[in-house]
Length: 567
Image 1 (cartoon, rainbow, N blue to C red):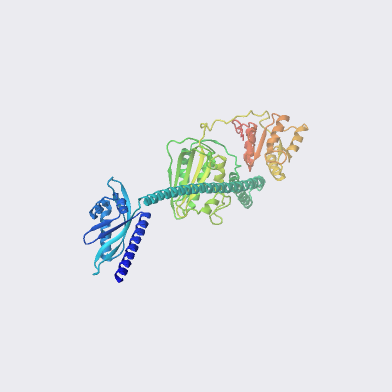
Image 2 (image 1 turned 135 degrees about the vertical axis):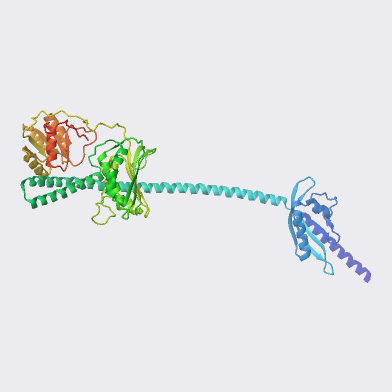
C-alpha cells in the first residue's frame, strides 16, 4: 500500500514538472526567447529551437559553443568573452548585446541574459539563460533617432529663421529709431539754424549802424588822440562782431558764397606756411596731397578759413605738442549716405594726436556755441561754421574721435563739373547805367530799420549825395510813382511785406534803367530769380559803399566792368 502511495506521489510530481516545463516553453515561445545552457566544465551548449533561429540556424541543426563563438561579429567577440569571464569570476549576472553574422552574411543583434550556477563545492558549473533577437528594436530605435535628428534639425532651422527674422525686425526698429533720432536732430539743427540766421541778420543791422556811425564820427574828432583810440577800439570790436556773424551765417547756411572750381591741391600747398606759423613750434604739420585731383565746387576763401579752423582746433587739442596730418583724397560715393548724395568728392582730412572726444561730446561738436575749451578761448562756432559751409556746398563734415587717441575731421566737397575761369575776366558784365559818371547823385535808400537807414543815409550824404529814405518797398514805389527822379536805388533785401527782390522786379516795370544796389547780410534770393543788380554785403564801410557807387556809375577812379552778383 505504501509503495503504491509513493509511486503515485512521484507520478504527480513528474506531471507537475512536465506541466511547468510546457508552460515555460510556451512563455519562451510567446516572448520569442531562446533558452540555452552552457556547461562550463565541458563547454557543452544546450539550446532551444528558438535560440538557434535567433542565430540563423534551423530547428534541427546542430549548434555547439564553437559555432556560437564563430557566429559572433569579430568586432564584438572579445567583449563577449570578457563578459563571460567576468560573470564566472564575480558571480554577477551575465548581460550583453552583440552582433551575430548569419550564414547568408546578414548581421543581426541579439541580447543575452544568464545566471551563474555553482555545484555543491561552490565551483561555477554552468550558465543558464535566455536570448532575444533585438534587431528590429534597434532598427526602430535608429529610425526614431534619425527622425529625432531630422526633427531637431528642422526645429533648429526654424529657430534660426525665427532668430534671423527677429534680428531683421530689431534692425528695422533700430534703423527707424536712428532715422527718428536723425530727424529730431535735423529738426533741432534746422530750428537752431533759423534762429541763428535771424539773430545774425539782426546783429548785422546793429553792426551796420555801429560801424557806419563810428566811421563818420572818426572824421569829426580831429586830432584828439584819446577819442581816436576809443573809436578805433569800438571799430575793432564791431569788426570782430561782424566776423562772428559770418560764422553764424555759415552755420545757418545763409552765407553768401562764391562757388567756383577750386584746385584743392594748390589751396592746401599754398597754405602750408600759414598753417605752420599758426600752430607754433611744438606742433608738426604734415601734408599728403596726391598730384592729380579733380577740381571741386567751392568758395576758396571759405575753404581756407575752414582748413585754418580745423588746424587750430587740432593744435588746441595737443597742448603738449604733436603732429597734425592734412590729407586729400578723391572718393566715389556709390550710394547716398546721410547728407551726401551719390557722386564724386574730394575729401580734405585733418588728423591730430590730441586728447580726443567721447561719444557725447562728439555728438554735440557741431552744435553752435558748444565748446570744450575753457571760458574765453573759443566761441563754439568753428565746427558749426564748417558744418554749415559743407551743407551749403552739398557736402558733409564727418568727425571721428576717441578719448586719448585724437580726432579726425573730414570735409567732403563735391567734384566740380566746370572748368577754372580766369580770375581777371569778368563773370558777367552788366550794361553801364546812363547816369552821369561824376557829381552828386540823388539816391532812394530803402530799409525797414530806421537805425540802419539813418546810418547809411549819413554815410551817403557825407559823400555828397542827396538821399531820400523809405522804410518799406511800398513807400519806395510811391516815391518812384509820383514822378520823382532818382539816379540810384539802394535797398535792403530782407524786409516785411515786400522783399528787396520783389521791389527790384516792381521797379523794373516803372524805371527799367534805374541802377539798383541790394545790401544784405546773406544770399536770400529764391531759386530761379535772376536779378541783374549789384550786391553789397552787410555790414559795410563807407569806403566799400563808395567803391560800389563808383563801379555802378563808371567813375574813372575805379575802372573795369560791373560784375553782377547773382544768387
